[in-house]
Length: 351
View (tube, rainbow, N blue to C red):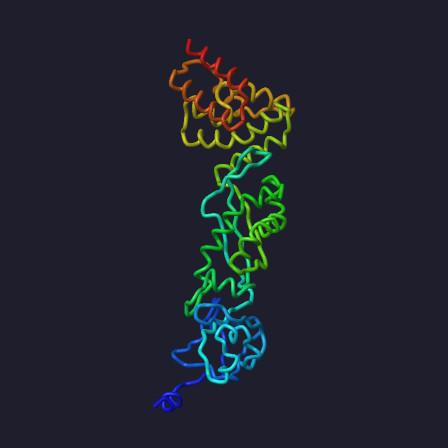
């Protein structure tokens, strides 16, 4: 009876894996009660590694090549099972294949802006995205830490964890690069290198090797980008207040004209149209005449004079103007001294 059972058994002569499709990191050879024939062949192709596991313990790891399975090629397994005398008969062991080729174009990005310290702006919230590539470097460690005894383990099951590691290390990478935000956006390769340096140990802990890291974009949220644009405009005119007022007026005139064309009126609307409030109307007109050395257009001059006229000023209009001037001060467009001076002028009009 024992002889008949032995004859009915199925034996495996060749153990190999040809990947089908993309994205499989680990694959378990289907045993289904079969045993490995002593002297059988193990084929491990380039970009693969194979791991023999016996009774839950990793016995041997094989790199690319063709192996005849004997006591010479499985010395550790032989030692574990004490098969130095019985290894002539078939044996059973789980065999796992691991893909060691690069897994490329893995996406990462910040779902929400992250806050970092910056020597130019103090603190900024930025967004960033890019991609990376990795491979399995230590299949034994990856088996024990990640894939385990599953029949197959796809890249998709690991994406969330790796993306989380990238996001977790962005702040450290920016600090390690030593670059302020404005330079960071222009030196994305340096940022990517710093990020890869931060990530390498975390990947190694689970048997992976980070092969490439790219940063494709670094940007600010829209509301912060507007403030940055304003700061850049101020930087273009330097500390010359006259030129700054010219810059502000040039930015505001289109809005003023648009409001007039739509039938808009009221002191508050006209003040914002000029970019600095009713109280700044006369100063803007004077700076335009002195700085640009060109005649002010009659329509613009009339508009400035009308905006500056204190006749018929209503308390609610003055309060609205003060609120808008306060908004300009909070954005750094007006200094505290300028705001206080214009506030005093407006309050006099209520007396």
